[in-house]
Length: 184
Image 1 (cartoon, rainbow, N blue to C red):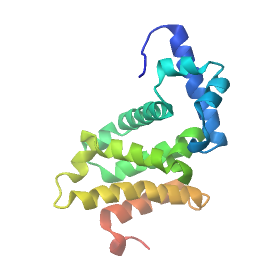
Image 2 (image 1 turned 180 degrees about the horizontal axis):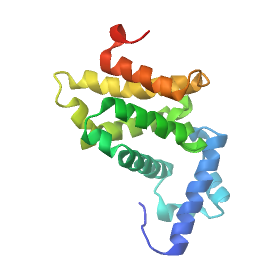
Image 3 (image 1 turned 45 degrees about the vertical axis):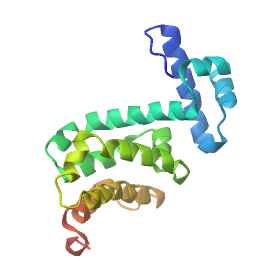
Image 4 (image 1 turned 120 degrees about the horizontal axis):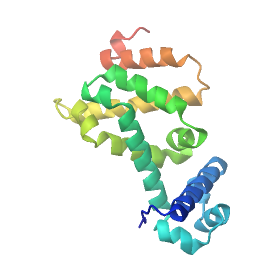
């Protein structure tokens, strides 16, 4: 139940809510965040929160939509050209350049629901459906698309043991040519 407005007060309030939420994300898991705590942190009352969002899930959904929109803008050329290696490169650079909050939401195992929703939203867009809908087994190709993020998350959780460009090259080789043909 979002209210959209050009009113500066409304925009400031929404910005304050999002900022407070992002601070809380860095401090705790989603299940531990309450609307009361969020409202206190944003220096608003609960009723004000509910003027703009119907729930924390509604706020999360808005953040997910923003990430999807930003990423689609970032990879528009590569998706239009069905450039798998280019999409992988852009995706890894996008994740690597995210701020701490976005990186936690997309990569932290405690926020896997967020990552899963963003991934599903992305893969349901016409830009990404074109990668796997034309194939004989779209569910297999879709699973490969999901694997791209798993590789990045594993790399991140292991302390970025290789340079990102090497990660991109190796991942692209695995995805495009398969395990048997990758430069092991």
